[in-house]
Picture 1 (spheres, rainbow, N blue to C red):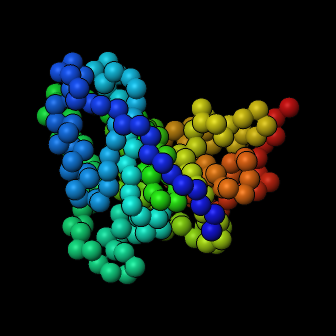
Picture 2: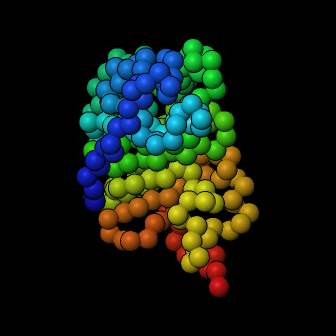
Length: 221
């Protein structure tokens, strides 16, 4: 499989002054790191107190296949890690507590799940969508792994979920049929953007049909 080294971006200091401090944020970050074997960084440069939007990097010391198994099943190489199986998203409860404690409706506008060989970039599609839908997305990615890796032959080094109209994948050369755009804004299980080392341009993965789209793009003048 192809792979690409994923280096974490520079961490933004969230607690350097009382002006930009989000009450409960440090507790939230530490909770995620402890429970899910990762490190979490805030990477957006905007002032937290003015935007209320967070961009987070979550760095795992696992490959994508291992990480999806751990997060979706609580298992690694078939061994049960004895993780508590929650119906909620793996950090939905922790993030909801942050919103309550901080007395602000802070939201995550982008979440980057950075594994050793691949990065999954998850975009917000409605208020609190990442926290609410992340667990379902992880399970779907785990179940679809063989399909978006081209039968386990190629691993995308970057996966964008979902494919939105303002993503780089919508270019002057290729565009998914316009009737699909509205759906993409509401549903993570629609179209994903895949980047492989073997080519410059991205591929589009149809998560519902579990296939990479070939020859189905509408070419623009």
